[in-house]
Image (tube, rainbow, N blue to C red; front, side, top):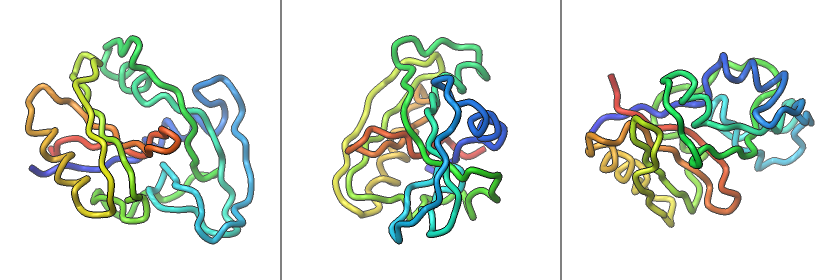
Length: 162
């Protein structure tokens, strides 16, 4: 199964940089940690000296707005880091190595906004890609969200290519 990995869309990032999905202005700071924060705009970790913003993001709310469905109780709002200013986005649509992490949960959603299931993954192997591909084999699955286990934060979305 071929799929594409997607960051938060640039038009949505522009909105979040002004007012986030919880109705607050972003919290901006200069990165000072070598390890950095996971950026959802370019799918890599922030680097020392970069201006980053912490914002609340509701990925299913945005998707529902564009598709006309109601995610109901599955609409989650959570914290994400993005560049404080526009960036070039990710280098590719491949699985972002810098955001691989040790523990991830992959949640699959139907085209009507219902959650269909999820998988908890432990380890830094390519099991995440395989699991995302396997979930997308189900024709009822419209998209998969990848989240960090520790904080529950949305990392990126995976959809079928094409």
